[in-house]
Image 1 (cartoon, rainbow, N blue to C red):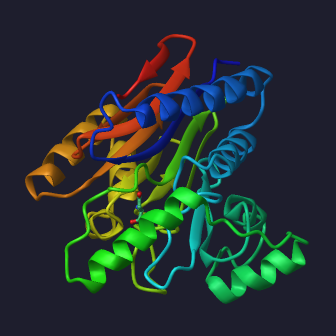
Image 2: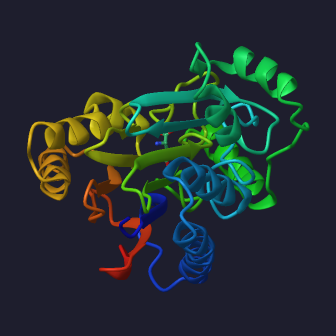
Length: 295
Ligand code: ASP
């Protein structure tokens, strides 16, 4: 038996320096990490932990996942989520689910199924099969940002990057038995075309094997172009320390002006992260390292 490591993130983007939002986001991340830590110390499995963590982050309106997701161009919300169990190398996820509270619960359900990644129509049927309640994830602040973006768009102005706050959520865990898992959930990039597919329900956004678990956030097109999460873990499979793979990959992508960040945990429980953006809203905890903040 070893000790657990838990790392969570609430997105990457422009700095929130000294604003009220920075304090709010910190407080919410800390609250969720504290809750997860208690469960992790009671020997919860890596998959149990990533589900609980991702659901707690989806339920928090501060983040762009589940309740509080960003609106797409037509004013609707489409959410995507993925989970991956390291030891089984099993990826599952939903793409562009609507009217549900926790797409992560659907991704978890699909872990044991033959069809492990479902699109919007499949997600709708699955939500019914799972008896999920209809839920409207639109939150007031996001709606007023959407109104503002729509006005700017109509006037031919460029929207500001991340003007509506923090992003996607994710969690990577090594449990007390040494098992690894990752989960990521998103409302998308915001103001995107209807039907756009995010990086989150792909192996570029969320990936884990028994060597490492990685969750990515930032511009989904950039993340997909770089095959980001899978590429980092595969470098670790090939013998490179995961933290080095994180640093080198992010540094190389920064030179190509990519906009994203990742959190990671390796088989020893060592946490790492890196970003090409001004800020990565992440925090992690282990017995050895204590609580570490990325911002
Ligand atoms: N990666 C997400 C997307 O592009 C957005 C984010 O991480 O904030 O859909």
